[in-house]
Image 1 (tube, rainbow, N blue to C red):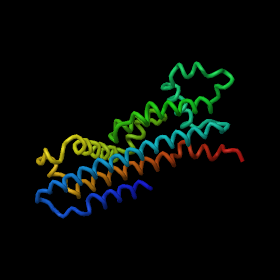
Image 2 (image 1 turned 45 degrees about the vertical axis):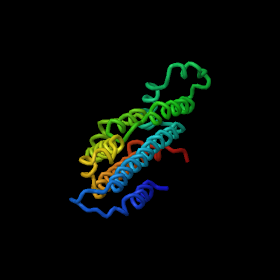
Image 3 (image 1 turned 60 degrees about the horizontal axis):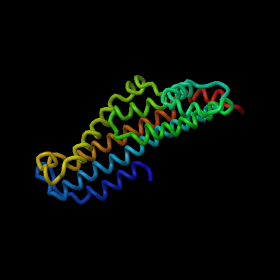
Length: 215
């Protein structure tokens, strides 16, 4: 199921039945629904962004078959060399120490050390994932200033919803209405989709890949 469909399904299941409108206080069951929507939507978007960066790793790794290495491949290789454990490097024989083999080994480490240890959608989380695939953070940050702010906001709101009981803290949870939750989730979803499209169509490596592709 596509990300937009996942978020839409959660909205239908959890928010469609809420009848209370601002500024009336939400009922307890409605506060629970809003909190659940924020937490579960955040989880869907977080999983999606992890897939986005892992797909980028795989896509750039495929460029290792080209006769000329695009800049993104060089960046990925350099990043991989920095985080690949020395023990894993030592067990690779000189004969098998090809670029393709090294990147295959690095992929496992990237999954274990970056993807599996990712814990959120804030800009700091995106920066860590980008670091592992060799993306220049200054470039990504400058391109997605507003989107990273939206992700920080959603991450913070998810933290509040995930760590504060909607029953025991009415002063906090009553301020979060369905319209606000939809706005935060929608902005976070759109931010990740925009980053995904940028990585998938980044001309800095794709154009060179097409120009040098055999045949």
